[in-house]
Length: 212
Image (tube, rainbow, N blue to C red; front, side):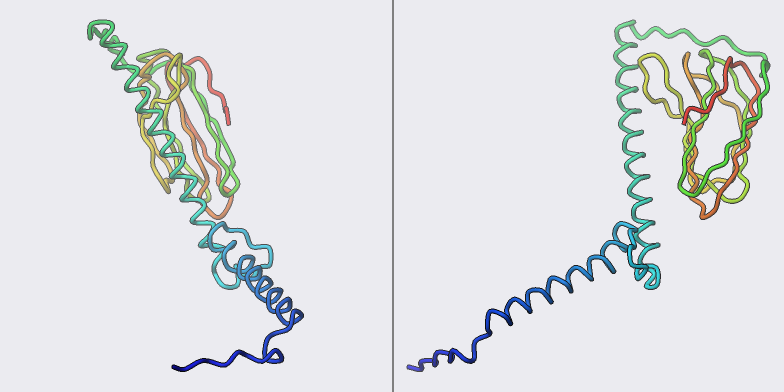
């Protein structure tokens, strides 16, 4: 039977050597965290090394996607709650619904609203309108593109979606108010430079206001 020899005391690392190795390992791990992990995962680049290695942009994209995914999830959850609330209300009323009276055309006031957004900045503009009101709109982006969400809220309704999109340079059409409340648009600048959004509205509403 083979018995290995015990190492000699002088062959073992000293306490000083162990401490030095531990410090070197901790410093290496810290350097990797600051120079690689923070820029590539969170877009945080305190040393500037992430930008040189192309990691900071990757981290910023990851964070933007995470923010948008969270916003989409929240909007979908709110829409589901609204649909459930409407279903309960319709069931309680015996399923009876009153159709909104037909509108002969879009009339009322005219407004032009301009909003300038820095990169990654968001803004929201809402119009106050009654159920069935018809609002013609036309908005355009100068200097880049935006992500947008057209939606509304009202008494007992936190979110009602009309439509959304990404990397848009403008939209136009007609919004028909689904209920009494505030109806409008949320934009977020996903360009690398400031943009200016020009919103033109015409129709049956009493107020236009930037709320974010």
